[in-house]
Image 1 (cartoon, rainbow, N blue to C red):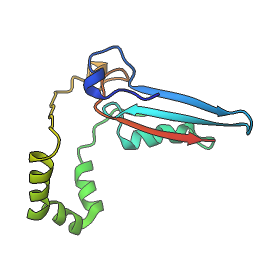
Image 2 (cartoon, rainbow, N blue to C red):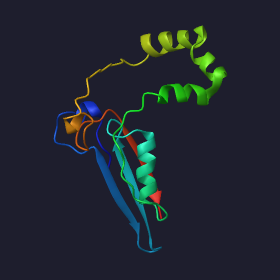
Image 3 (tube, helix red, strand yellow):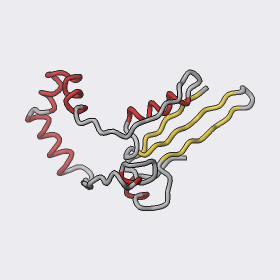
Amino acid sequence: ATVGKGNKIFNKDDRVARFTVATNPAKGEFCIICSLSHVVADGYTYYKVLGMLSSEGTIEALTVTRRPEMGKMGEEALGPGVNAHVNSSGFMYNYVCCGLMCGPKTRVIARYVDESQPWQGGGSEGGGEAARQGALCV
């Protein structure tokens, strides 16, 4: 089972994470399928959760802390060549003309995060913008 997209589950009583256990009794195997809303967890958190579910994983608390330095760290990790390409006129032309003007309709949503509201980042309940899916097979 997968979680719905954010605009479908926002402000609704719906799940932001789903875990499915699929079994193969003949071989004595099982698989945990994870679907996690991207708003409540980024890729790092998603893979941390999968890692904790593995047989070698260690369960540890996850903190809800924004790290504004991550943007700069990403630029440093990609290096000057990739950053120059992303900021080049050719890339921008392709993005604007092919992505924004002729591509599918884009919907931009901006919200303030109220840390006291669990569905806005202060807890584990609430909306999602996109779903991450994966499987951990044992």
